[in-house]
Length: 572
Image (cartoon, one colour):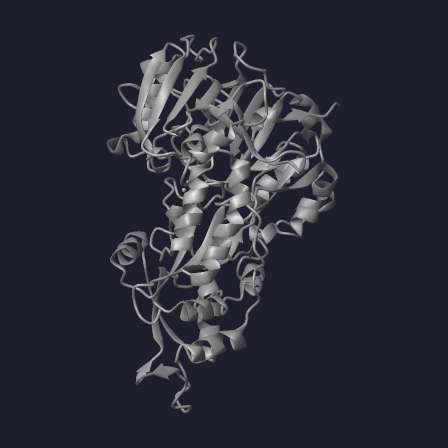
């Protein structure tokens, strides 16, 4: 199977494909509340906390619609794209525990991966394109990948890129002692990275795994001479990308176009990432013309302020489609959750549409599985069921759970009541005791279960507590959230779930697929397999709503962000 710089598709013979055998996927996320390090699962941030934080930092801003636009601001910065940063980006490290904003600022701009993931666009399916890798070849056995580098690439300090830099970077990610937790699982199937020549290297694999190519589109390649002693590089940011770091001060990170860039120079000369924690101030600055992109509006501004006349005149909606899923995980090792009928019944008690609207203010959408276009597993989305208490009651009855003592209103079987333990993140105490706290997604679920005779007791704690409870299996239901990259390994999100033979076969098939378009075709089979045993049940997927200036062209959303190197400005 060969991928050359001159073509758009990966090509392989039928005999090569037949030898590939088996399959599995992983992430970087979007969203201001995402953690610095991505885990296969995390508990969902409490919506009450998010709402309170938003209210505290966001003054009401009725004057937004009256704020005068200033066209001179746009003219004065004709070569600069200004991006609102809504959370402190922290240390701008491309590898060591980067925040969401640190990766957005550095990956694809200062630093480049070997491959570029090109999302589907209606004209062509998803595919890989060359970046630092000029070409790559997968051996017929599927156990070796040969990579040829672009020959004339230099880092920003003038040093040439060599295969030794790539080997150093990939080995650093693979080393558990380096704690590159958000990328290391993607390279688990790599047995060794070997140098062939100054511009060619060989990856030997433990098994055929398409996830390795997916990883090569995410790992930023570092210069060994800068980062060998420490992956922090003493604070240096030296990459091969189309922009270099010009300054980082007063809350603004300025990237300037690198004049000696080896590839096609980006149309936009300067990027400024502007940290402004006050969402009302950011929206006002956008109205004045001093910001081009707001990644995610807060609930207080959606949709009313987004539709203010001055905003509508100068901006288009931007939906980043972050691959983030909030879901329930069922402990299939503990009765009665060992019965798929009980798990299916509980899944039918999630009022996803109401939760998306009332709990998340429309900034989330109903989701059943971690499968949607651009989602954790990128593929066609299965229909999301409505709240169905009658159907849930029938399933519980078939499983032997009936209400033998109608006076108590609790289902029972063999003298044991149907009581379940649910664990999740802590619910903060309201700041104003006189105001009722907002209802959470689990509140809707618990109430629906109680109505049909299922009692759910809730225990909450911090992240470490929740992590331990899940690892120890000390729960019946866990309220979790998964944040990762689009088109990633489903084995991670199902790490604590029952894996039927059909689920395993579906995951193996995804792992063996080298082409992202082939994985998209295989994804519905995983959804069908999950629907047979219900090891997990989705609640909602994040649906952040942002704004992008109409003067910006070429924005294509993928993996919760956009490729800034593909952007340009319209004419004056």
